[in-house]
Image 1 (tube, rainbow, N blue to C red):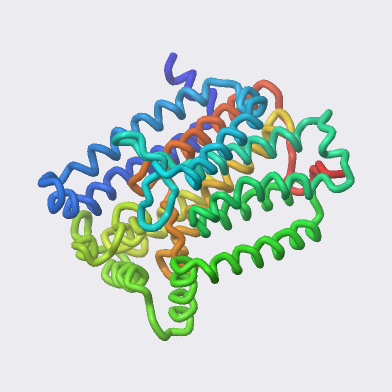
Image 2: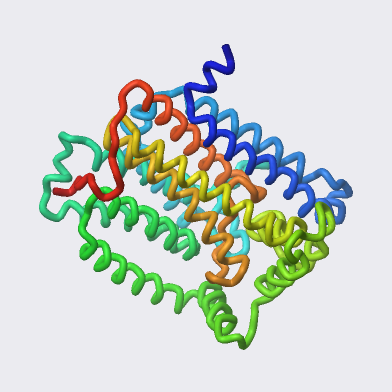
Length: 380
């Protein structure tokens, strides 16, 4: 009976995600045990907290995979509004704790929540719902794309002002890519992108932390100087070689590499599991991309197609950017590796997205539709 129920959903997507979560639990323990012993006199402090978060997030995933995804599409405008209220609260409330020079987190006792994760997720739902509705008035407007751009900007600017330049740029990039896939011509998207990047660059220039990270990245690309994080990350990969030092054998986690079990856990993967292990993680994400797009293309309606594409891109783009940061392809952004990094907000929202994606796969069996990328011209 249980096996029959599971087979109603996309088994391979579920298997791939659970594989990454299992690997994440193992690597979080390995990367955090030294710091946990040093600070809390227990190797398992961070592991226990991470496992609790994984179990809670999985519970949400299994719940959402049983709820028709159209429900979330209907309430998506309210989710966007709630996200915006939380983002503005972070900026104006004196009670918000400033962590590492940024106002990104709502702290509720032992719990920390990052509203920017909810905001990006809500905007994906909203765009899928609004563009996918046949009776939507907004898509009949001549300049409908610019209305969407404006909505995105209203939500992204508070993220930028936290400041969190990396999340702001990635959020906008993923949403613009989704609009392009929906059928919008390239010119308005490029125009808006250039205007937005000019604004982001101006803001980053006057923000000391963002400016420091960008300058460090430019110097590193010129071969002049590496930031401490980037240097230690590259040393970790160098130590790992092809096959790695073995589980638990990392040396960079001994206070050399900052954030070894959060933003830079992929460097510990490279050190302990080697190039082959690090490559294997990326292969799994590429397989998730393939399964997610397959589910989206067979969605029963256009909204389901766009929602499936948006959720998949949200996960895979973050994974690729995180890996790129670790090997100095991109500047340090402060974003986690999906399903691997220690954390709560990103893990919760990513598994919520997987739950909705699994529900789309379930709906596919009832009513099939095929929406090849760029063949659906929603804005015409």
